[in-house]
Amino acid sequence: MNEDILKSIHAELVAIRQLLTETKQAQARSTPARTTSTSSTSTSGDTPPPQPTEVVANPGDVKVHFGKNTGVALSSLSERSLSWYAQEQAPRLDSSGNPYPVRPQELTLRNAARTLWHQNRGTLGQADAPKATSAEGASGESPSHPSDEDNIPF
Image 1 (cartoon, helix red, strand yellow):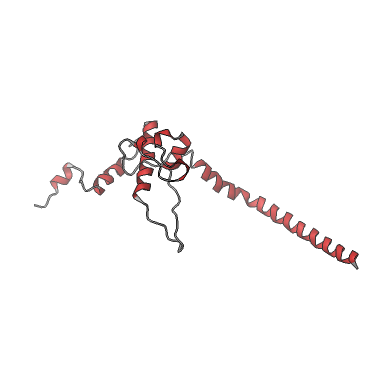
Image 2 (spheres, one colour):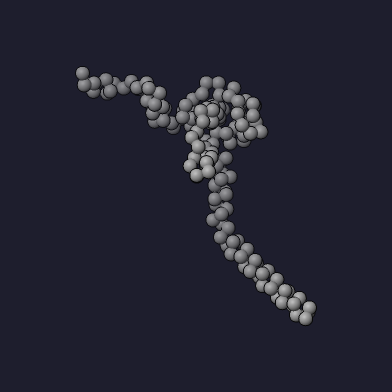
């Protein structure tokens, strides 16, 4: 009787092993789609971060306010760390799945990291002229255009 039980257990284990092997093979076939998503994540460090929405004066003096680099100035960080702080991060979600609003210190850190990153490469403000104009409009100062002065209704 024990032999019969052991043989049935063995047969079930063999069946389970075959199913696991088939599942792994099926996942291996669909892995290229996953590798593309992970490779796009890994290449995001290779792509330059976006231009800052607001240029920060003395960006190297801004200190990190969280994590293992708490209190460390951006100018003291490695290029890889600086690039990480300059990239757009996934939003943190509350328990209901809604994103928390961006805190001012997070925005300042991100803009300072982006400013420093682009200053180091000499690309600050390049290919970003429309955003600079919209930033001026957002700050309350209207840009001075001759065509705007001609269209004043009074």
